[in-house]
Image 1: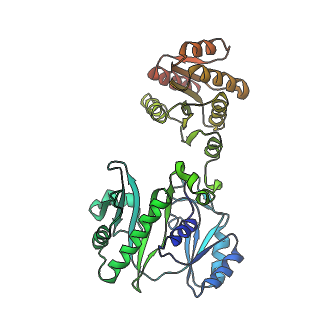
Image 2: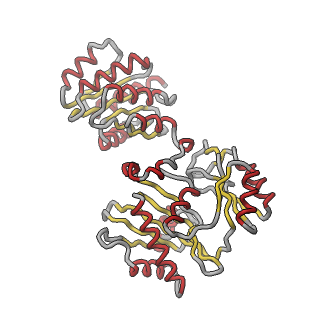
Length: 389
């Protein structure tokens, strides 16, 4: 789960990480009044969407008077902001963050993430703050420094100083950096983060360290321990189908292709998308119904897949272990009758009760194409979709 910048900074402030004073606003008049309350200008008005690159898209602007804050906020609210992370469709701005300006001396990059290679939380830092870290990694990888954290010891002062020195921080700034990095690590662990990114972490002309921007990614599986963070979820920033899927305990991610996928198990779902691509098709989604799906969940899964108007065919790929093939077959039949599937449907079943599942499909009287394996299923659905073009 992601949160907005103003929410991220509220969390950071709670853990002692220095952030600028600011307030979220929903209309121009409120933005003007909050600017006055925050003190003397200049102020920064930031569009709040779940995407990076807002500055390049016109979503971050400087204002020198409270009236200018109102004008900028009024223009931003309701606009469709397009960045390299939103895609061409963009995202509508429903709120803005009005924040005190900052006298920037230099910009740094710091993030914490879970490194799957080492199975440890890793601090990543760079002197190239304000830039996309992917671009830095591609062009100047030597400017990225990493420090893995022992989970039994935590982030030590020695490691913090090492990171600070790699960023060129000296003197009093080193001590301040140790406090900031320690607070960031404590935040990461305490809130079950998967990503915590500060870009940029600025050194002000007055010699202070301030987190000027913040991005959080939280482990969805741990949100039951953080009800207040869960309440920060903004459904306007998420795909409607993904929201609906989450209500039925389905793992669903929208993609841009035209072949819908209904699979049990994340690994098998990934393999299914790969084999569709291998045979020239394009997956429209990732959908894992899980190991204990009911007929109702399978039916809802079909409804979600078919709500995507780009879907021109569906491949069902089930390996029945905990999930029994006859349950999937019954769900497919029920969904086909309820929804009225008008696109080609290929079903590959294997595992527990597979013969019963295949018999149920064959006796259903529906136009369902059976497949003998993953490769056969992928080829059949790709050909069926191509024949419709």
